[in-house]
Image (cartoon, rainbow, N blue to C red; front, side, top):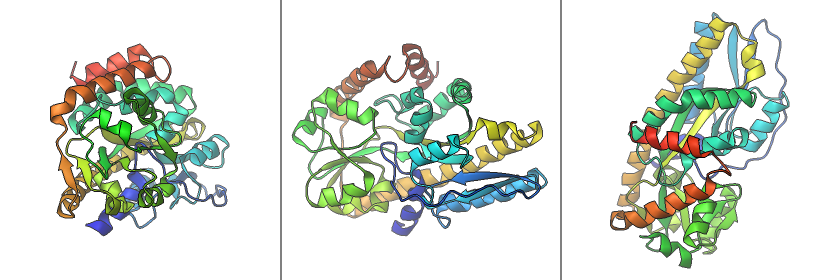
Amino acid sequence: MQRAARKSFLFVFLATSCLVLGSGHTPRAEAEGKTVIRFATLAPSGSTFGKILKAWKRTLLKETDGRVELRYYSGGSQGDERDFIRKIRAGQMDAAGVTSTGLGIIVRPVLVLSSPGLIRTYEELERVRAKMTPRFETMFREAGFELLAWADAGKGRIMSTMPILRPSDLRSARPWAWKDDLIFSEFLKVVGANAVRLGVPEVYAALQTKMVDVVPNSALGAIALQWYTKLNYMSKESFGIIMGATIIKKEKFDQLSPEDQKALKDTAARAARALDKVVRQDDEEAYQVLLRRGIEALDVEPYRAEWDAAGAETRKRLTGRIFSKSLLAEAEAAVEGR
């Protein structure tokens, strides 16, 4: 299980973070009598996501009669998600698999989906996607991208070396926040805590030296990055679903025929659903592994009102800065099935 979690997580980690890996050379698209889509991903080719990408490539080739080929640049060879977006805009890459970090760089309002306290279950996430996808698709097109398919990456939890039961407990802790994380950083300000801002590769050492003692993560991520070896507690309840998506530069997408555009989006959606199924299962298995490894699950439900109040205040502060009031209202209605 630990090995499986490590593999699948390397793509899907984090809502709150992004693996910062060294940039490699930028490949050039080759003319082979077909449209080649250069696709950047953090996932190693042998990971769960890498295997699903390969299956997507085969299916797309078949359904377009060889006219469209996905060519992957995996393992972070093209840098991190910020590098992906920069290279796509510069015409050096065409598409990528990104988390909320990368999505927010393109369309900041999409971060409404990561607002604390908004989406807690997969069922709520599915309802929001079903209702709001057309609106987000329009936003991405206006920004020069096509949103191919959503994906998710497990349940976000608060993990720590000491019990964290209520938001005020964070004030005496040293919570980690990724350097460019707008959402969790604001939440920490609301509850009166001071964030320790680090890149993901720095976190393990920071846990060792006690520079940080609280980290938001998924069970899958805690195993993959070995953070769990330095932690004692985790929240029993989910604090949200880590999300991501596959995107392509609109200019590249528009080069395809309507038939091939449909094939690309249809196969992307099928690949994303296959990934979701694997990740959701692996994340739940990882949670059980952590329990067996001695990590204590803390029930924060008795203090849910305090967490909800802090989340509501965070959403209020972000409204008008990151997303509009109408967009937040639409997301809230979708969560409730309205």
